[in-house]
Image (cartoon, rainbow over all chains, first blue to last red):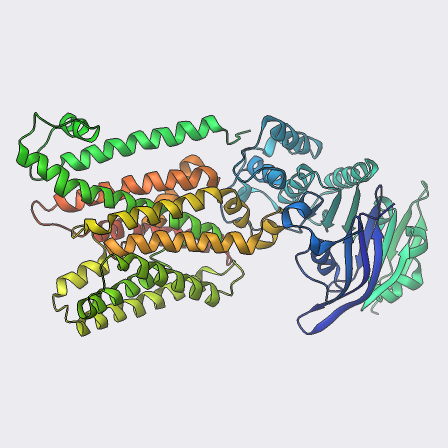
Length: 261
Length: 343
């Protein structure tokens, strides 16, 4: 089966600086893949490349086996949705309006949203427990609420692949669980997700596979148990960490903090 | 959940059209020669106006009507161009006058007028020159602001101030060179007015405004998405570069046409979209046509005030809009600053 998203020998640079080289991994249907690594290592850059906002300096990116730059913006938007870290909205759009904008790639140029579109938006808001925000102005929301709205918009976009750039950074524990549950359900329905996360334990719980990025490229890739070792974490983060198994068999990762005295 | 339905669009745009029609009748009936509202409405709806004194009928049809028609076109053009600029630049302070786009259009327009007095260039080419001038100013604005569609208010406003100062200086310089020693004409051009309407330009002005407005309406959903930023718009399927280019050409067309017949009328593009957003929301599919209708009515009303308030002496309409728009601008700037550095 062709992968939903495939990176093949991808290099990326920011300005003159080469950030990543020889990146190779795939996201297949039914799978949640985690993208983990230090700040500034190029996770967001990879997300931008995966949504054709930025071109790789070399290498290939394929979406369902087809070169990403052969898609029109519209065709790509029907396949891939990105949830950004945050969004600055200069006008007082209402939450409902913003979520319905996810339908844009499915509508003709002059179309208005239908009843069915509205039902889809309300269902997404319901699942994330924020239906009561629907008529609020987006400019009055907190960072966490805004993040949930952006996630709802991505669901309404009905893509095959979700790209989530730290989807839970501003969220409380309950909403983290909500979002990650939705991501799992999304993948289970035969679609896929690529998730950037700084919470290693939650990433281990959510992801089928993890791509651990270090300076310049991939440090390790595979099942969470294979990727998360003291050795790989030392190479990727320059930290010492303890890795435990929780009673349910999931990994818990706790960094060691050296005493200063 | 408030969804933008066809029914809601019909109700809002229908109501605004009725208000606009009433304003038009009021403007045509108001002036030194009193005319009844019903007589004017009858004339407008195709009646012969037999009940009217022929001299009064002439005043309404030959003096007031051309001025009102151009007022409608100019007001609609400036207001909707303002709304488009605000979405594209992601800044509620954007306005063709404040940004200096009107200044660029005016400078190009006056160049052709100045040349015209020497080389017999037809006055119909003034709107075309103004369109090109507006386009160049818009291009420069994008270039200065970094081109990526998100720029700080400070850099935008500074650019606008410099453009306007440069354009005003250029206008005065060219006008002096060409021997337009009638200072009051230059003054009227700089502050914006509808009093020396040249009806032979009405056709090209109407065509430009309608073409620009249609383009903006067709691309209005893209405006919603572009208002969220270029990257978000692209991720939601908008061909960003192409749509932005079309929208910038459309606004330059509208601003060029407006400036060519009325000079530098300011703040219409600021006042109208801002007030409307408070009432009907931010969805550009409704906002753009509603802004055009409201802008048309606002300018005609302002012009009626300008030509009647001082009892016999006329104010340029640009003075009225600036008196309303200046304080609003300061208020919006203050609020934007209170919200944070990027707004």
